[in-house]
Image (cartoon, rainbow over all chains, first blue to last red; front, side):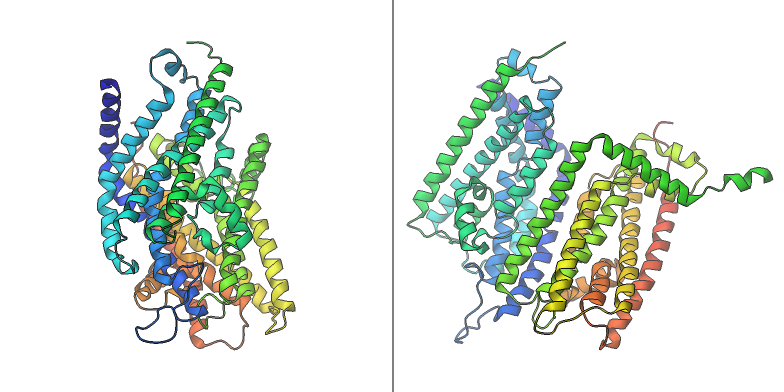
Length: 279
Length: 290
């Protein structure tokens, strides 16, 4: 136990060295949201009434169940979801370790590779949140009027938190499994790029998945990508009906279990195939 | 430098450029599978964007009430964005990235010693041929939307010859503005030592240029509109040429022609500014090792 604690501590310290750069970078990441606000306003504006005045009969326009303000709120909440589920450098790091033979370390030392990486990633994320919470809070405070319904009820917040944590784990095991492909193919960078493209689109990072045409939407809803961005945001904004919520969460947990198993099997098989030469 | 060598020391820039282009192509073709995968992934990115905009036009007829950017016209806008971005990515992006690396490692010393304009050498050394696949994607988008625009029932339009000529001129202007901006950004890495966020910053700034400028022209967007039109003219890059080809040349308000003229002036100014910034940055460069 103390071993894992030391690993966590070291990784935390390592991450906190560049905190100023970190905070600035996080703030910059919100810049595209400005473009999104203006783009979506123009789109809603050309369809009809962007915002209904209180007491009037004209209804505000909705696209895929999202009004203008909710749409902006959606992009903001997906930023949180991505802060949990994105794993920069994980898959490529594993593939690199396989290629240059550093993976031997984990075969000799009594440390489990996946456990080590997971702990490292948790430390990375914790350090990131510790610094990023300030810019995030600042931007969300500025944008608070986009959240028309205010804070969601407590049970939704609990589900939201759970979906974020599971989103983190699904992101981790999914990417780690992709990195394990490196045992079979030495170069995975182009494959990774294709994966990143798909996940950008299918996770709902680009736009809410409920905008998709019906047939495609049903199909995309069966895929696990939505848990990386769309699903937590939809929970937070109350787009998942309360009676469906437990079932949806259970499905997410099953996907998580699936990716844990895939990752374990890929690692075990990969290590069997692996031959480390030289010192 | 003595009198006899001045004649031969003046390099033929065009020939040098062709040599750079050939070398890069040879290099790209050495890793052919990688090259094709890169092409495929950039076309994938294009398809995703096209899909996104098609979905938007499922719901809306135009981007912005009364702005006139309907589906065919907006896709011409997108095609223009694709032309300009692919040219910038093919010719300047790899060089800008390499430039900050040259500074960090001290390799810039060797570039300074070469008997050729340093900015030219730094800007054109590498060409990323795979980025040009997006140029082709742009050609496809432009052809489909021009066809749609010409054959549709309501309000069909075929761009006039002069519109096409002006379009080409202003696409070139757009590329030049982007190039100048990139040179300025990468020159800052001389002062900062290294510039890892260059690519990010580039992405965030050009993000503003990707949509019709009308959408910013309201409320809090006005300062942005002004800033990105007159101070850092990225809003002009795509908007001016796209408007020339997608909307009838006549009638046009005086204000619109002013914008076109300003785009031309802004191009000249940004080249001058970038050369000045580059020169300033070079003069404060100290080699990395000694």
